Amino acid sequence: MAGTGMTAVALLAGCSDTPAGTGAHRAASPVASAGRAAATESSRAAVAEHVRTVVEDRLSADETRFGSSTGSPCSTSSPAMFTARCGAAAQATGADASFALEQIDRREGFATLRSVAKKLRTAVAGYERLGCADAPTDAAARHACLEPAALIAQGFPDLRSGTDLGLRGA
Image 1 (cartoon, rainbow, N blue to C red):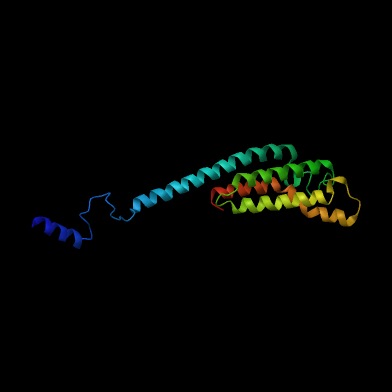
Image 2 (cartoon, helix red, strand yellow):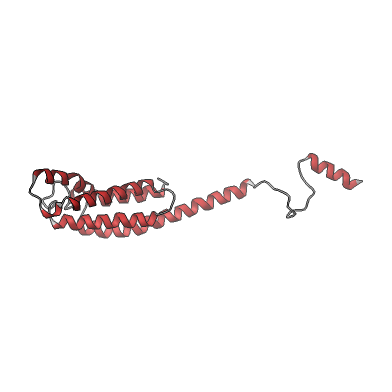
């Protein structure tokens, strides 16, 4: 009779006298859920750090070689904007943007990096399509080169910002 009383107390308390592992449903413990969430966050942080590191290695090398912003041959104030020097910087920027996209392919987050890299690839394609590196003489063609060249000149810092924001989940 004592066993029946214990079962009644267990049922009233919301417990079961069914041994663990016999198919009884158990609610996930808050500690286990928090542990899984922390592991997921840790995994995402590790991926973001890896992406930042490998992309940064490429960016640093190309930025040292070509410069960026007003120091870039693609700066709209640079006399090299309509030369092969800017064309080479554009190709390097496009390659770095493509590399960044490869690193984040099918991964959550990285919205800023993804957006920046796609815009840069479009700018590089436009710069090349317009023949900007071949010193166009037509005023309209030269004017059309300004926007893609400006984006390319700012490309390395913008990609770097995208990788940094990826560490924060953006």
